[in-house]
Length: 460
Ligand code: GDP
Image 1: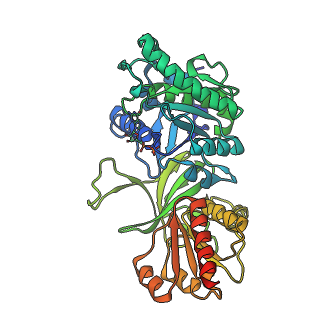
Image 2: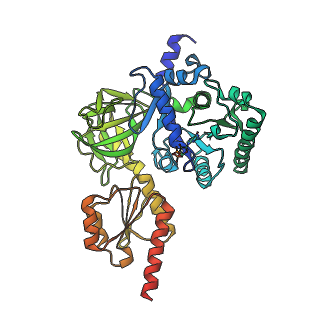
Image 3: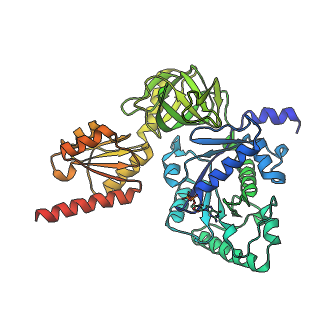
């Protein structure tokens, strides 16, 4: 293939979006930090952009990090985009057109701890969404007698270990392979895997020393390039589509959106439609912002303005009227289409996320649309009626609504992964409205059910 061919082809291929899942403390954050950290130090100035909510690692940088495992000439995908918030909460609540926002996942498993409840939950979610994944068997540095080999691919390092260290690690890796098999997946040490579509690659890594991370990147690139190219083909010049990760107040800009753009291109000045708490919001992009690398939090100029961004990328959008935008909602560039048509498209997508409310019930607040839906489902199963369900922090208005409930057991706000605005705190006391907060859905529902049971016992 000539150079021109590969350039024109990569113009139409986007970056695969990668999510990191796994049990708490198994090393998801450390792994992401290590990948981001080495990407920043390996990348030439300006080559790596620290996006908001998602970190893009261009192919050249992946290749520098992965050494001989990723030769740029073998790839026409432009790199990898990592979603910065790990965990299956963010994975399952961030969607694109009804499917998962992430194209591919890294399942992190602590070799000392093997499968834990959240590992199994994560696999169930990956199975349900049909998302391909690889396993990062993490913390191999803790293997007794392990002797890290600087800069070697993990297979070489593994083979260079003492017999004792290797069999200790084998024991742990085979436990993981056995657990995967119990869940219906065949898997193997990644260097023995021929077909990553039918066989899950297990990559021994250490997020602490960085061993195995080049291999992990190599497998991600290889897998995407070989099996997912069709899904990565996009009309980059087409109108941008994205998902809101977060709605954030920024000094000097007002309400802004952190967005992962998964299709097309967005420009400063574009008209966009965004899912809002009431109606879709139609507005014009005032600025597209990227955080400056190494910018100090307190300095005035924390962002650089860019004229356009191509999928897949993380970007901050500044525009008027974004106050009511919802995390998890779609963002669409109108382009040369009819605005009403795009509004209908956004409405149709939002209609998929169904939350039934009733005349009487509790108030629910959640951080994203997806988590709001999951909360509503859990409450419905527990036969708890909902009076109002909204994305966003707990505000005085929510307290006012909750205080109108007829039944004392419904004078309640259930907050999932949200903050309480300071002026709402006072209102809670004044109105005798009880607030439950948690970042695990079933715990939140259980806490509330216990409260109702206690209340009923007290009445008897
Ligand atoms: P998360 O909850 O999955 O995001 O896990 P963290 O990244 O916060 O890691 C949990 C703990 O394990 C922290 O104390 C980390 O320093 C430690 N840890 C993570 N990766 C490794 C590793 O590869 N080796 C060792 N020895 N410790 C690790």
